[in-house]
Length: 390
Image (cartoon, rainbow, N blue to C red; front, side, top):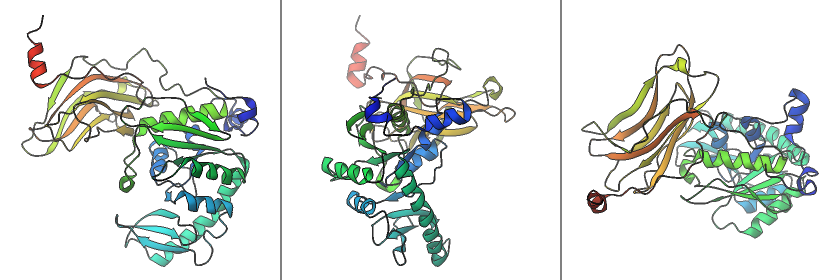
């Protein structure tokens, strides 16, 4: 368990774990409780989807919003006083053909989750005024209490000085912690967050979701980052993602396997097993993971993991990553009485497409276990020559 001094954290933040202890007698919050303690500061919609995929749906003023950091600081400095004031809001249709609610005063753009043409604009605008009035009050109360961990991704052109100004603007309201999230790139490994200043912490994920497809989340790094951040800031143990780390729910062959599409044209080819759901605890989540290697000469549309009847969260292969190992995984549950369930890999592609797979795993847990990638796969002439080595 990683901790910081009581002076730097414990006297600043009231722990949600303390509230749990008084209500349930359990001082260790669940993963869902931990993620519910975070609030987005409007980098874009990505962190809102992180919480959704983890089955957490908090009401946050900026959860599915975008605002430049300078406008966010101005909003905090003025207590969001003009956000949602008469005449501040307008409805805009974006390139994705969805309605967004934009603030003229603070340049906050919020996804309304309404497709263009699906609702009367005046009715939608009225709803947004009511929504913002309610959530603005809640946010100011949360900021004063200091019980939330506030999340902001680094954006293009945002500097250390910008984040220092943001931290100052937040401190004016109360003792909230600010988590600055940066991209680590494809070589990401789970690491603890670092405290870089009073109430400011930093951590990394492998990649950010593309701006135009914020739902395309690389979930495993986000889950691990939030868990270690919560544990560090609130001085509680990290989540035990693997109740029994030594026992796999099902054993798979360890050998390297090549998978090829079976269809002449693009279609789904399954490389999964059919398993009896009754062999699994329906109240627990399970994870299937496998390392995959996509050759540069292959062009599948999707490589994915499948597991169970109720899919909770997953990570497909990044099709831009070629000739190196990456891990795909899916977490889910099995329902008794629902018939057999699939566990394994799938590919959308044609018979011209192929990939290699190694180290398939199925075990109880929430996210994949940490492990090193297999050794680089030898291909082409090198592989052929090695057949003749003693």
